Length: 181
Image (cartoon, rainbow, N blue to C red; front, side, top):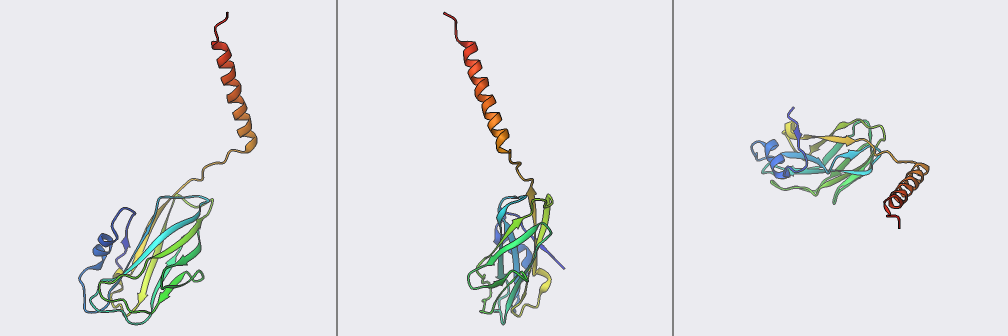
């Protein structure tokens, strides 16, 4: 099974074009998945964007379903897009309107929280099915997501001590440089 993987900064049209192959008289749904910036351990509200395009020349028929399989370390908090009906359990969105050949459904946004102990990178996978698509080889997209370490938070007493130390050092330095009269 051929898989599509795109990174931010790559045009969706290029990613979709690479996966589509030749157009057919039937619907041919292709999915692409992207995210912005690296995620951070402990981050709340990180987002993925999922696009579905019909590379076939025929319209879709019936229900189109997008499912997402989150890796360990990510927890879905919202999944939505204009015209889509979405659920968090299972993580899926559906719609039944017709998508013409060469058409694109509105983008889905998947919002996740990143665990404080999430690994340095994860791969998130989304899949599209239904709509009369008979070419499943390009119905899957993966997105390798880098996760940065959490920024340590300095406890307040340490911050106060550091600030006082810096102020005292600066005051001493100014006194030491004053010329004596």
